[in-house]
Each structure stands twice: as structure tokens, then as C-alpha cells.
Image (tube, rainbow, N blue to C red; front, side, top):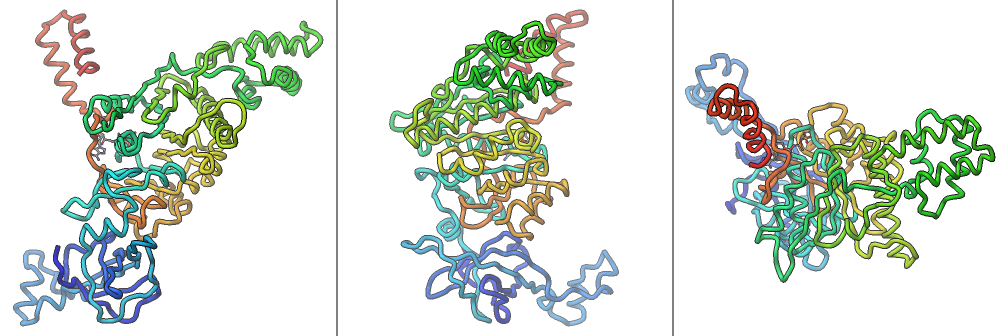
Length: 525
Ligand SMILES: Nc1ncnc2c1ncn2[C@@H]1O[C@H](COP(=O)(O)OP(=O)(O)OP(=O)(O)O)[C@@H](O)[C@H]1O
């Protein structure tokens, strides 16, 4: 890296946090790049926030597109360097002190003081709380503006305790990145207890980690368990009263009162739907009453027919959540309501099990912190979702009990802002929708306006990472996945042509053979 200054400080600093410098550099000092100045021999890292030309070519020099303005300037005997100076605004981040960690000196540089482009090593030392492969680290990718690979690494402890969100328009690479984070969490330097709510069945490919060398060490090998629809069960008696009435449509006040009485007298037992029906009849005092009949019909029609709710079977938390294991719940075949109720019941049980373990209380316990990745989070975290209340509680209080959440969404404006603002690490990729951009500006305070403006210009696999798990917001190109990505965009023309060439091979009338081959082609490859 060049150790010559890249610019000189212009005038007195605007505040303790910001200053401007002048540079002839035409290409390197983009918004989001890092520079430094020296303070008592220490390198104080600053982030470039804006760059503007100091002097523009007169319009008349630009009137003939076939003649470059530099040629006109030279023909007039003026130096082109006069027109090639830029003013750059920089925001002071701080320096790294071995004892104190990251320190903001609050002493801006003096006018005329040199400014240098920060070396990758300095950026890592000052801005990253962890190094690649260090215990408790998540290597998400590399700095976007650099040709050399400057790793961007997050602090797992802060990501998992203070929650995270990944927000972007569809197709920007959210689930690819979430896969990278899940891989990191399953590495031997993390051994996470991870649960993934996967409404599009995109994460099953993480199972490949079990056979990869990179994930083993000191006798450790991660385990990935994929639960499909038939294995995803919650017991009826685990439902809160509110969740129960949410499942039953058009309840009259009388029906609700009856159900509440029956529910309360069964509370604490592992009751079945038949027992609930019997209890409704019993507490009413008149089993032939029309309200009893109407309520019984609803319980049979709307609870006994919902596959995810079972009288006896439920998923054991200890099977779902273990250090070194990822459990992937494939929810694609469940209705929205079933998904929300499942999330609500499961998250409630997880939180209670952690509270029991931390406070030494009786009941179901989980003895270690857990991390839950929730795809399509707007479905679970909007105010009208049945899982809203428990998510709100976990986002507010989960930190104390070791329940961390990663919310992933392409519609952040639909996520309640109280919930979003509790995600203390934010990864934001390309966002085009203005309502979503506004929502991010208001709920994600740590990101400056100038960085938010970069969001529409990001391309697939590029992200803005900010928050507690890193010392400064940075622009990142996401690293390559070690496992395959389950949510690959389909290449339709390629698949159409494969299908046709197969059907030609088989010849006309070979419909059954074509179907079999086609199935093999699309699903087994
Ligand atoms: N960092 C990356 N490197 C290489 N390919 C990537 C990267 N990120 C995303 N892609 C590719 O871009 C496509 C879309 O990515 P992905 O499925 O992660 O998007 P998404 O934001 O989750 O979309 P959706 O909201 O529709 O689920 C996929 O084909 C994926 O393989």
C-alpha cells in the first residue's frame, strides 16, 4: 500500500467528528472508503462520506462530445490538474488501543495535515472486533471498495445476543448471505445452537457442512437436521388462549366465554382436542346448548384438521437446539396462520426454557444460548401476525436470557419498527422501494444518511454492514458460500432447452419416460 499522503486537510475541522481534505486522486476515494491521519503516532481511521470536484470544466469546454475537455485545457496552455482536484468529507472513527480497544480521540486533524489511504491491515485492526477464524467470529466477506481482500468479520457474541437483521429487495442475496452466516456459526470456532425458520425451503443444502473439512476440528463435526411438514408439530395444550381463539373463526362472546372457562380449567394439563370438547360441554352445564354445539363444531373443523397441531406429539426443544447443530424447519407447506402459530408457540417455549435455565426454575430448560434465523420476517413480525407479541418480547428481553434472533426480510416497512430498532447489527443490501428506505432510515440509527444513499446502487451480493458487531459501518462484498445455495435463481431458457433436448432424445410419444428423466434432471442433480 502506498505510504504517500493521498490528500491534505482543508481549513479547520467542522466538528470533532468531521473534516474536509483536498486530493488529486480521481478514483480511490469513494464514499465508504477509509483514510487516516496521525495523532501522536497513532493512525486515526476516518470514513469518507462525500466527494465533490473543486472546480468544474466550463460548460463550453463540454460542447463537443468528440473532443475531451483535457485537450481544450491543454490547447489553452492551462494545467489540467487545476480541474482535477476533489474535496473529500471524512468522518472520524477512531484508533485502536491495546488496552482500551476502539477509541474516538475527539481531536480532528489540523489544516494542512496529511491524510493517507488506510491499509487493509489497519482497517481490520481498528474496525473489526474479531479476526477471521478467531473464537466467536463471523467472516461475512471483504471490503467492497478494495481490490485486495480485506476481510469483514463480525463478533458472534454481539450478533447473537443483540439480534441482527438482513434487509434487502428480493433477489439481492439475503438468503445467500444468511447461508454464509449459518456456515460461520457452524464452524468449530462458534459451534452454535441454531434454528432456522425456512418458509421457502432454501436452507436444507446446509446439510453439506457435515461432509466438509472446513467445519471439523478437535473432534467436532456439525450436525444439520432438516424437519419437513410431517415432523413439525406443536401440542394443542401448548397454545396460549389467544392463539387458540385465533384459530377459531366467528366466535360469539358467549362462545369465547365458554372456551375461556374450559381452557382455564384444563390449564397446566396436556389436554387433547377431545378433552377440550368434553370440557366445553361440562362447563356449560348443558351439552345440548347451541353455543356448545357451534363451538364443538369449530374445534373439530379448525383444530383437529390443522396438521401442525397435534394432541400428543411435539418437538422436543433439546432435539431442536443443541450446540453444533442447525435445525431447519421447512415451513413451505404450512399456511401463513400455521406458520405464525408455530413460530409463536416455539419461540415462547424457547424463551421460557432459557428463563427457567437462567433462573434455576422448574420446567423445560435449555442450558445454553440459542440463535434463531427467521426468513420472511415481515410475516412473523408485523403487528397483525400471531407471533408478533413473542417476537417483541424476545427482541426486547432475549438478550438477558441468551435468545438471539436474525430477521430477514424484503419488506422491512411491514416489520414493526419497535422490533426492527432492537436489531443491533444491521445488514442492508440493495433496497429500491422508497417506503422501505424510509423505514430503514428511521429505525436504523447507526447508519449515516450518506451510506443509506448508497443502497440503491449496490448489486447482488453487496451489503452495508453496521451496528454493534463492528466498529464502523462498512460496505462488503459477501464471501462465497462453502455449501450450495438452495435459493438459486432459476435459469429458465437453460432448463427449457434441457427439457426439449431430452424430449427429442426420447422421441414422440415417450411422455412417461420424459417425465421420469425430467424429474431426475431437476431434483436429483
Ligand atoms: N454473494 C453472492 N455471490 C454469488 N451469487 C450470489 C450472491 N448473493 C446472491 N447470489 C445469487 O443471487 C441469486 C439471489 O440470491 P438470494 O436467493 O440470496 O436472494 P434473496 O434476496 O434471498 O431473494 P428472495 O427475497 O427472493 O428470497 C441466487 O441465484 C444466488 O445464487
